[in-house]
Structure formats: structure tokens, C-alpha cells
Length: 206
Image (cartoon, rainbow, N blue to C red; front, side, top):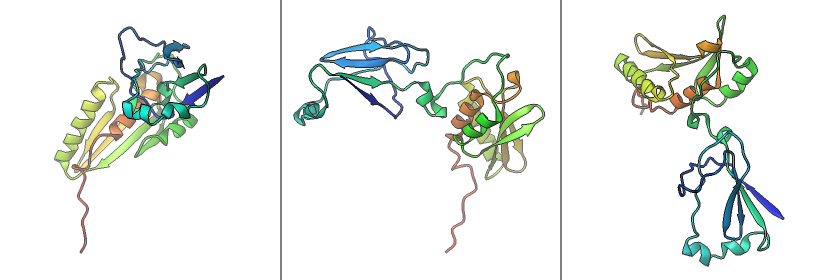
């Protein structure tokens, strides 16, 4: 009998021991005290670490509440890259022969980024976001923060500092003439940039 537990939250996976390496998209199987990795694939998060239970956990008798006998096989399915939020995913190299993202798929992914809208232009679809800031200096600061975030990905938005206090960012993948997953990944990373100290302060009326 096999019991499978699906972990629906993203895991940050760290190396347990250098000799414990899992195959991509692995499934960990626990039988008695042994751990083995089965499965295969290419969508890999990393190595899965394990630990011994704490004394308090042993005292609670948590193991007695597990359904199954002594020879029951328990499997933990490690979430793959598709289970991560967009901002946690890395940009990947694209082939110039790859087709741009369809309008339908772009509208679905648009729900996962905040403040961005789709532009349908002759050159293809683009993502656009606007920020109203406190002043011109704050606009410069926001552009610097965006650059620091996207530099590691190597996928850059088109940034425009528009007087007196507006920043406009546009994302698309010129090599394929439209949008790719990389554009939405970068948009999600930009969404996480702190801007509360750059936007106009709200007035509080007595």
C-alpha cells in the first residue's frame, strides 16, 4: 500500500549531504528508516534535505497517527519549477525560432502580476506598467532599483522617466517578436521592489 502526500507549498531545498543527490523531479520514498529517490525529469528544484524528529515530536506520538503499517511506503512529491511563483523562477535562454506567447496565455499570466497591462502593437504583445512617484528624483531611484533586480536575469525592460514624476516600464522579447515567460518572470520580480518610500504620501484629513 502506498500513501502519497502532495506538498502544495514551495520548498526551498538545500543540500543534505553531498552524496545525497536526487534525480530531477524526484519522488522521495520512505520505507522503514531508508530514503530512496525515484523518478526522473528535467524540471528540477534542487536537492531535498531530511532531518531526524525532535524529542518533542517523538513524545507527541506523531508517528502513531500515520496511516499504514510498518511496511507502508510513504511518498513525498517534491514540487517542480511550475509550482513556484513567477518571481521565484529564473529566466531561461530562448530560441529565436520559438513562437511568441499567444494572447490567451498572456491574459492568463497577467493575473499573476500586479499593475501591468497588455499592449497589442504591430510588433507584437508587450507588458506595460506605470508608476506615479513623489518627484523626479524618486523616479531615478526606482529605475536604479529595477536595474538591480533585473541585472541578474539578463532580461531588461524598456524604462522611461517621464517628467515630472512618472516611470514607464515595458517588457517584451524582441528576439521572438512578442511576449515570453521571461517577460512575466521579470514583471513579477519588479512587483516585489519596495516603492512605498517613493510614492506621494497620502493626506490624512482630521
